[in-house]
Length: 146
Image (tube, rainbow, N blue to C red; front, side, top):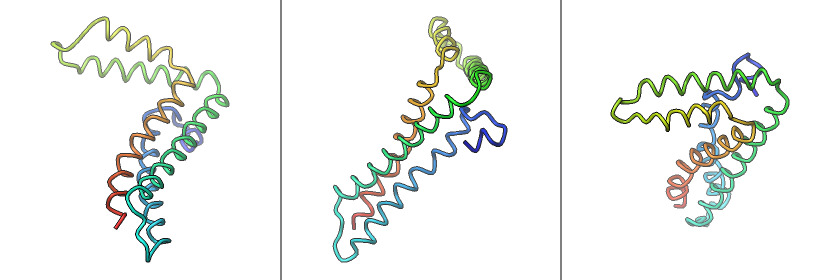
């Protein structure tokens, strides 16, 4: 939402910077669990469950906010997002090694970028949040059990 208010594209790859907070929130929740159960150790299962639930809650909130924002902004904003995504895809295709290029695959990439919907954006946000959150939640859950 901050990206929208600051005049940036709220659906751009810049939103991933905000998703990087989720692993630290998961680690914080695991630390808080350990702090609350000070004389007793929480165990691996409980620490991983708290971290996983924190990540799941954060991913659900992030996806819901993208979905709501997608339905409240104008179609021009969504078209701007699609055009930026098409430009990013074209640049990545130009940078790809010529031996690994596939014309059919590149055409499919461009078609998917042009047909991106609000639901696709919300699903992608949910997936990225889960992946980035669990990236730190699992190791911190194992470490913070003791």
